[in-house]
Length: 253
Image (cartoon, rainbow, N blue to C red):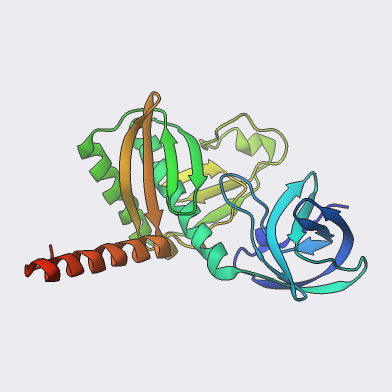
């Protein structure tokens, strides 16, 4: 039985009720499948959600065919109705990062024709691998334009075009797609086939900040942060700058 994916109906929904369809011992504790879930499974460069099912900790979430498997620290009874709660702060952080990546990749693709050939949300920062080179001036310009799209606060739209309509849409994709395709559109900034979760409007991303740009294969790898992660990083940098300035009896810069 396919799991109903509540996270596609409302990416901001954090609580739900569901019925346990199966619970089996697994490598990560217990593998629990529900009839419906708000827990997003790992995919598209975005980590799986964590949270709680009726007091039992969910440490990760993965997709297996049409089912969403929750890695749980303890067992749940088949047929049991459970109360589920995702770690929403963590999910929202990932939505900020993922939407910010879309805006940035869209700007680069429109301006230079480069493809995003690699995307990963790490514990510390996000990496994007691009198929072409960027000069320091282009890097600065791209970062500025990405932030302008965030501040315009445009809607983030999700659609499921039929095959004929899909042929007319100039969307980005890392591979050839078959079957139902989910399109995420940030009007003016990006159109991309994507299975991830995103914020409702670009303004919720807050800010995009590059940390480094390095040559990688035939193109570049950009390390960046968005939203809450960017705010915390910049705050820590400023606090460190102030502390160093005080130790040297100079003004922070």
